[in-house]
Image (cartoon, rainbow, N blue to C red; front, side, top):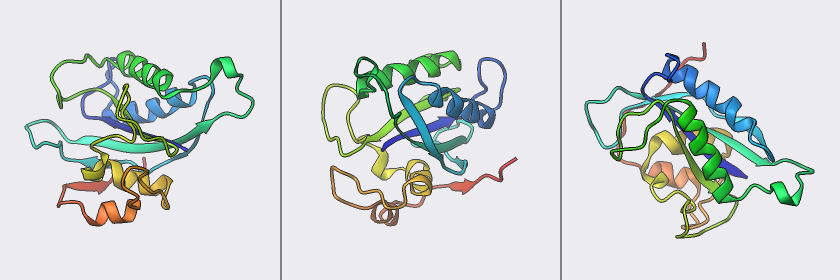
Length: 173
């Protein structure tokens, strides 16, 4: 299973709200050749981490898998997936600059199956996901039995160890 975190706290390049942008991003991820989205979490609103004067984020997670019948030449690799996600971010108006800056879209590969690697990018599983409620709570929605392949800890264990963070489920509209 491939887990991808989705977040936004600025309008899309076309003026769409962060929630609309996140919904748009799910469709864009589903359109990546060789990938099939199998689940989407509820949407959450969370305070920026680290704390800042930024607006709150809308966050979610999608679970995907390699589509059956994908030709070997079109295999989804962590590197190709990262390139595809960064292209989606760019279409949403994201310009990379200062770390942790507000953004119209942020797509992070949280995990690709049981792959553990420190290099090259993307590092897997995502090195900061274990301390972020905005990743772990939606991840639990789509993969309640998930185990971090690096630490062997379940998503429930990781959530129980989180420091207090401002996060709430958004009502679906």
